[in-house]
Length: 407
Ligand code: TRP
Ligand code: SF4
Image (cartoon, rainbow, N blue to C red; front, top):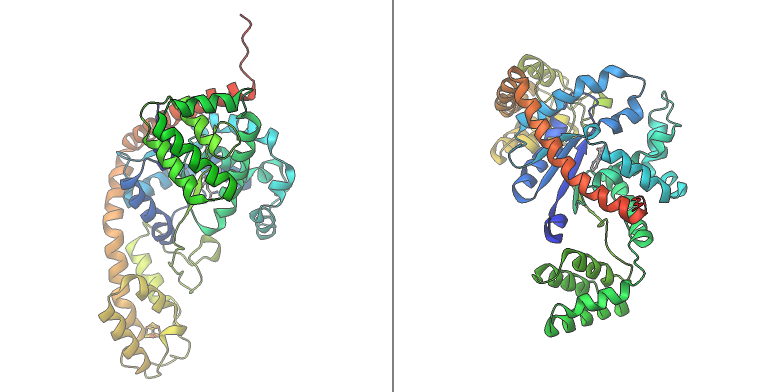
């Protein structure tokens, strides 16, 4: 059994397989995952069911993207030795939890999630007036809660989904975490910590409950985490008792806001497939070079001798990511003084991006040539994920009242 500390440290995130990854994914998401995998127990998965909520009429897209995306992850440096990589639909327990959560989730909560209306507007050509699409964030909640993940790295657009997850978890714990004699059991669990710690716990609990003192709440949690002598059940009870509700069955996760990707697209807007301004993570070097050479610059620089302003140029945004101070200074002076041409200015970027991609492309090749290796990685990840998911579901079925014994 895992202890509460380990649970709270668990990181979970998913990505929809809807096409090839680009440098925006790399700088915005993957590099972050790669950092996290050294610090935490990480679960990263292919959210194929989520992709299906919008791609239900397009059988090819998902199937074609799943393995490519996993190769992208591996090639970028996501390490299957530390992180568990899996495919959502291979852990059907997610669907079961989604169903059970749907029983207690008010429709209004889902209708109010901002991405619901936003995405419907944005993807007008599709019929997203579906049950599945409305449930998108709740399926995400199930993804998170089934692993009792403490931290969920997401972009800004997904924070509302983590917020919903917290509300759903709270409601679930409130409904199902109650035991008839919860308070008595909690009080007797307190005593098991010994005189000194019982007193500290009770004091901290009072400070939190009466004065809303969050520091006291944190201290009490830390105290519980450090207790060696109490059972897991008692520990869960005492975590729940702090907030007065009941047993904490599904812990509330925290959004770990990914620093917004500063990766600009070729046109200066955010890099995104829908804007058609991307550079693929493993794009052919010739294509990369061509895309950069033809990308727009400050329109004031019609001729080589016309001075320009880097602030008005998408190329400059790339220099922010890829260039040293010295190069940037060379750009600013050369641009404003018309000392360099735009192609000169782009040259160091072309080199930097090709250099960044070379090892990724090379590692990807190994995986492309050995699909079995990739398959094994995913099989192992799915198995590890299922083990955790199964445990949670056993507990969930129990508390919801779906375990029937006729003996
Ligand atoms: N909705 C997420 C996205 O579009 C993908 C996702 C699905 C996810 N389930 C998740 C992210 C659980 C974090 C946690 O990016
Ligand atoms: Fe942009 Fe560089 Fe050309 Fe200036 S010199 S307009 S920064 S590409």
